[in-house]
Length: 187
Image 1: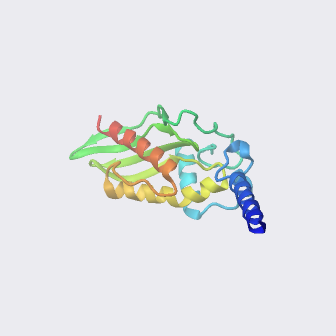
Image 2: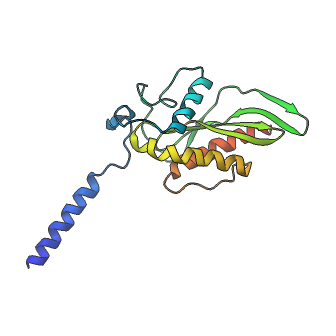
Image 3: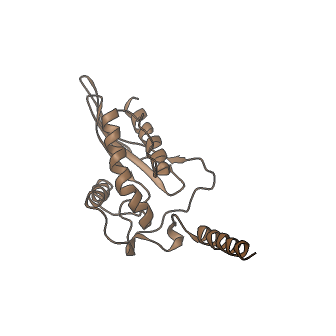
């Protein structure tokens, strides 16, 4: 009888701990990037480039700390997109060259947007200019996931890249935005 009571109490305690653990909190969760420590140097550089490309003013999508919060998680489950700013395109001998910005894809954890640079029809640079970074968990995941996705894009020269285990939401949004940028380049 004593073993049954101990097993029951252990199970209840485990369930309470399991349900009280928050894997990722949105802006309303209070776990913002302000108190979470420093960004990795590569992620900080990417965020700075994104802010400079968007006119030099950091936003919630490009800087995290001190910015206005983004909307909460999507309730529909399907990514939504918004039209990106106008891009400059030019034709060069042998293929398309220029910079193309994909649609912003609204994911469960926040917006994702990709910008690519093509030279003679090849992707020479891919940059995630928006991605979830509202809390320590998002920053931790995307500090390793975003550079891998960008590198895979240049290597594959297409949107046919693998989703990253542990960053499936960001990967899905990245791939969708990347495909829209590629589609714009081939218009």
